Image (cartoon, rainbow, N blue to C red; front, side):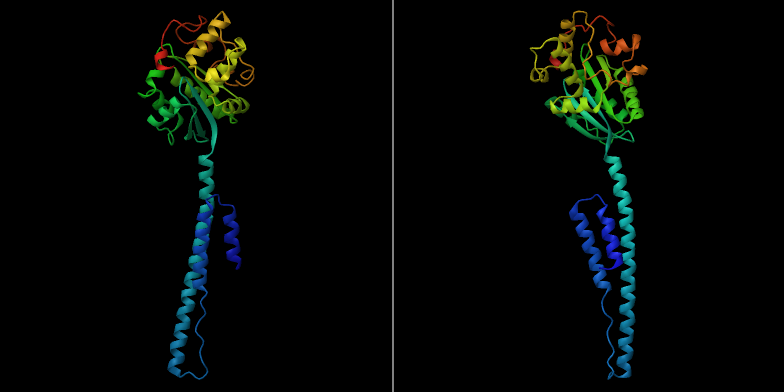
Amino acid sequence: MSELDERVRRAFDDVVVPDDVKRATLSFIARIAEEGGQDAPTVSAHASSSERFVLRREGRETRGRAFSLSRRMFALAACLVLAVVGFGGFSVYAQPTAYVGIDVNPSIELGVNRFGIVVETTALNDDGRALLDAVPLVGRNYVDALTSLTQSDAFEPYAQEGSFVEISVASDNERQGADIRRQSDACLGKLPCRSACHAVDSATREAAASAGMGVGRYRAALELMELDPEVTLEECKNLSMRQMRDRIAALSGDGVERETPDSVGSRDACGRGECQGSGEKADEHRYGREGKRGGINSGDDGENAGA
């Protein structure tokens, strides 16, 4: 194996592509190398002068072809270097750095990359699957994706007055998390339903995933189970966010939402007044614009939408 072959193979070891693509490309380069290494014809001592001339000319042509093929190999090696950079860039692009859970009755999760683009979507229940089928979101920037989703015909039944939408943001990038919460807050403010926006830590997100629930639904379930120990997670999976919030309000007596242990300390968010925080703005997001501190209006029947 030549030094160039060795360098090419070492470079390929670091390229994150399917193995069959690697093998096909390396085989192609090996074939070119083999073609480029053809021996030049030898000249017999007994050949006539005309034969010697022809053979020498053929030899020069063979060496010329070999040189040309060698140049092609170097060009391919250069392309491989670009491929390493290109695939590395794609890996960065495709990697979510923030996860946004949206719970109403549909429960979905959006994976957002460092550039603010939705690169993956996950449906956490059947309604969520139908919603994502109706509104493709991958490839859109987060603001456009959330706006398209919440303004779509498919989402409209879940955004009616009396419904409750909760967005949960998990990200190790504090700045990105804050930006997403602010953007979510602005979008939720345009809806007629009540809403809440939270920052959550990765442990809470993983616990919710293990339970097969969206983060917002999981947090509400923990809160409801704390108030009513007879309620189970399985039961909560079949309740809408509105239904759980109504029951939480009724059980807590004063209609004030209680914090679950998982949410305490995980909301770096909203302590800056972006989503929850404190004061009147925070109350609007926790209890809805229709009745701050008045609890969730359980008399408004919007359950036919499942919200």
